[in-house]
Length: 609
Ligand code: GCU
Image (spheres, rainbow, N blue to C red):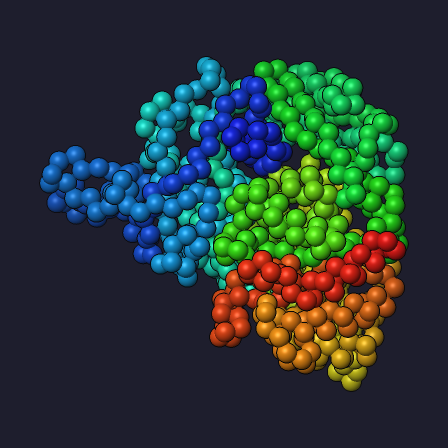
């Protein structure tokens, strides 16, 4: 798989701009991009029959089954035996999970074969072409015109294949096998508290670039400096030093540099007049990078994020992270987010709540989320699905987690909104687990030293003193923040226990409560001691907030969760019905009482952080 590619023009029709991401580089001028979104033919294949077609061409024992769905075969004669036909099969929307599109696939966790036909006219001779997938859950085998391009494992990060020389002007057939089975050695493993939405859940595009193109860049304000930007521009396909121009037209700034033998140009320049990006002033500047026949442009913001003791500093000023957690699901239709509008809908609700921060749980969300957060002014925590009982001793599991983290960081490294990379969620402490996570921390520091690192860590209570909660996790030695989930009042005791709890957090680092909350069915009312009523949930928030404010290092929180979300674990009839009800907003988009408790708290924090 070709990892030289970082930038893509999603589609002229959809965004009309460029978005730095893990994919083929492209530009508004030097490149052509074809969206392959739309209706794709599909064959549901729980036995993975699609790998072979049992037609045997000869009688001798040496004959092997030939064919397979990836060949998109048609009978050459009436006597030919071919037991599939994409042209007469069902179809699904791409992007989109299959579970929420077809009732018969609601619980389906296996293989679906997708096929897309398309024509392609290259823009000019000598161009290069790349097939880019925004994400496919969980395992994707990709074939073009009958040739296997490769496999991607991991359900939430982009990947691409170079297809230069493999395309026809007419009648290309792209076949993708997507398998969503959960696997013990997977990332995540078999047990989660969210719906395992399978399919080609994100955009599919064909991108064309010049032979030498801009494949990656990074421009960041250096911490501790007043307006010094450093970074790099990386070319792919360069055969020697090449001129690069970086411009920020609004700031009347144009820089020229030359790439080295590896196609990389290092940059450092002052940026004295820029308005720094923040939730209050989400200022984005158009950036244009040109080199040879290639040009990329997109909007980026400049800001710094750092910690000092137990404080978090955004652009050198102390900030309290008024957050909320979020799954990548549109509750109004119960399926994966697939469009910029859906991303803006959910993040707009977070803004209504009074948030300046959102935890994109528990896996990399659609790349539209970070772009929407850049525009709306929301800081982001992004994470990989190293969740619960991962196989810490399995090298393939670590390689998978490291690859997903790398693909996420490479995709979103230029999003000002992203301030925290999270390594894991609620992973029982063991030597193998801490070693696994510390390796991920080292990898992250190498890939992106400019952001903060955290994870939802572990807490415990001494058996002899259950009212004391101690946050002790060896991982906290190497992270910038100490974050943890706590459910006193829901899984532990009742809300009336909150005032009796003492917290001990023995670290001089900022503390971020990455989850707390309780279930309530929107519209179900009763007294505050009746579980699943809005009154119980509201009381839980009312009693939790003052308890947490007693933690001296408290610098933020992301209560669980903005919206109700689907989970096969939640089986209580007429209350859960397959939904986790901890949302502050019901699956119908209606706010619960607890929404207003938190909104009032955040309004107070916004005026006196
Ligand atoms: C856990 C977990 C979440 C889960 C939540 C709950 O903390 O991190 O993914 O949904 O608790 O039980 O509702």
